[in-house]
Image 1 (cartoon, rainbow, N blue to C red):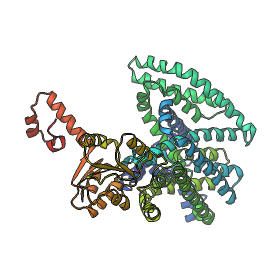
Image 2: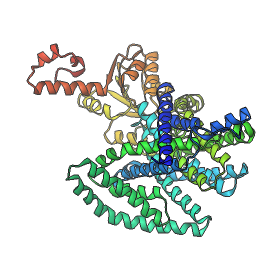
Image 3: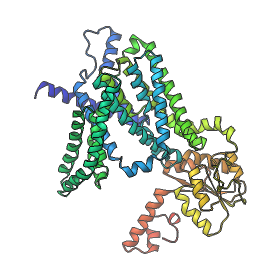
Image 4: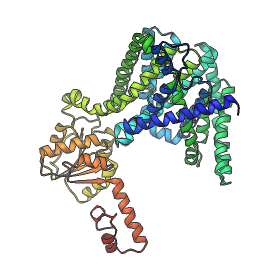
Length: 587
């Protein structure tokens, strides 16, 4: 085996082992996304740490800087990971799905991205960066982290909340913007100018994109169908991978980026009925090469600057972090608020998006590898990204506290926060006996049953969209934050006999339950939870806690055992996994 090939295999082995160790530490021990571990793995094995150690020992000439010193071939593998990532993103961009998710986020997301682009350019110029470096900084600050935000929403059970849906929509908009930016940056770097000449490849790309979409969506899904009939997973994977790479190479031939071609390939196949199969087949390859990409990005961070020239480096990081936290938080909060959403929802959106995303790494790496972005500025961007990603979980946790401290005193009349629609009830017509906190999907059947039984109940939810639905269905409600003490008092919490907590946000649910217990210790509280951890958090004052997955699993087991011939009474007595109280007598 040639020495070069052996060296490459050795480097890959080092990368994988370091990524495993640091990824495990970040995810399991620190509760952070593994991507942070991969970046720190790159720092640990890259030339930056070795150079830093050499400076400290004074043996610069005799030192070997890092376990991996040549990242050229590793960079080629990293680019493949980026292409596969964009291919996977393109698979999710079917016209129906994009139209459903984006909604109102298209305009607000675009405004926020333009605002951050301009703010980043200004900050870069003030720090003495060149115009091209400042533009790259602005482009980097435009994009938030899809991986981290989606992960945090899922862990907190907030995916289906008002701000969760808004965040997903805005992330889709930013992904689209990132693809455009990557294309523009690639064109600018190829043409070595920023003007009309740089836009020519973009125009060619639009024509190429349109032609490929029109022809490809009618042709290639049929090819995928034909290959799938062979029932060979190897041929299926080979076809998908080959199509992705070939389209990326064609894109490169037209003066565009490999990444854009891969994204286009994903879009072409997004309408295929084998969409999910394609995603599952490509995911392992995508994940492996993306790990290499993030490790290689960490390897490019020059920690020796902390010893040789720390003041400019630290001051630049502080400056970029300030622009990111204040500017991005403000922009996302205000654009959401202007659309008419509740102040709490707006603040949750703003606080959740204060980080630099995965596509930002790609944009920064493009500038760095082309020699446009200097080493120290590239290190500033990557270090800022690391700090912002680590801060994200804490920012999302701080959002309710900041709202209660600074916004709540000015919104004590929260329950009167309504749209201008005259059909929305602004007052409670009668004191309720039952209070439902959160007009979530899980509570719909309960609401219908209460209506059929002619029970006196009131729903509290601060979503204007849900308020319109309730108004159309003549459901008595007020628009307000169910975790707001003033709102609960206005809703009549002191008089009700039963409180049903169906809030999607578990932090809000815990606060609401505590407030209900504070003002009405005799009220029977029924709460919805997502998992055992949520149940433990809500169990102090809630009388009954229902885990939706648990109930669904018990009901499924009940019906399966019935189909197998077991009698109802035998199932109740002999099968421990079935909880009769959770199922009820009707099953």
